[in-house]
Image (tube, rainbow over all chains, first blue to last red; front, side, top):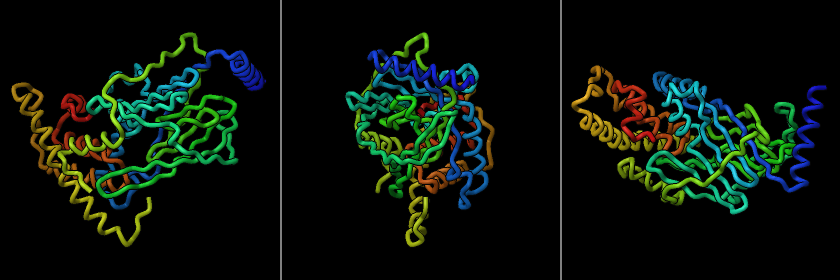
Length: 242
Length: 99
């Protein structure tokens, strides 16, 4: 009965906002877990290296991410948490390895900015370049009916390019076209996202909080993804050449 | 995540070659950090028998095998090297090449 009341209220809240063309805003919190393709599960890697990777993952395990959204804009970043304040390096690990930085998205202007710590760069991307394949496969996550959508990500390193399938489960009942990292543009909030090496899970959803989130683009030097890769290679001493 | 058997050996050779090269720049960054802090207590490190270059290379090798991106590989190698050298997480942050 409680669930019925909750969903009915939520439905009318969303429907009311959409019909009256009011602002639609809120915050979604995500936690994460490593996938089974990480170094820790590789047979080729020495035990002390597996231990190192595992200890870094464990150290950052309590870090949560948050995604603020306001109509057609969103910001995905690490959640400021008192529990994590005593472990600032956990945030650094999560930011560099799990989240790959912070993301600002403006779907109306087809803008996506990725802010990385190294060098204060802002990498300009286009949300519309992310192509999704929607499927009818369905499962429930936190009592929401979610559908599967698939896209891909290509990692580049000095030994080649590697394309990963990324799987999102989105909830059409929550008409928020955003999700973790650069994964946006689906017809519903991404409740679960299996990325290249980590999976994000929705922890908590706050719709229409008392304080409206303030979403502003990042400030800094805007560069293209290719330029950023060049900079990384330079920071590595110019040794990374294909 | 599947390796083609045909290219596997070549890939391993490439990973090892690249990891060695990245190491040079990491050692340089941390060496610079140690020089800057030469008069502070920060650099009073316990001598380790481990070859930290090898440790970082092994981390880079693992990250390459997991098909990670350049910046993730660089991060793991930096952390592996710094932790092996006896730096704390806070000092690694202070060194400024993690982000």
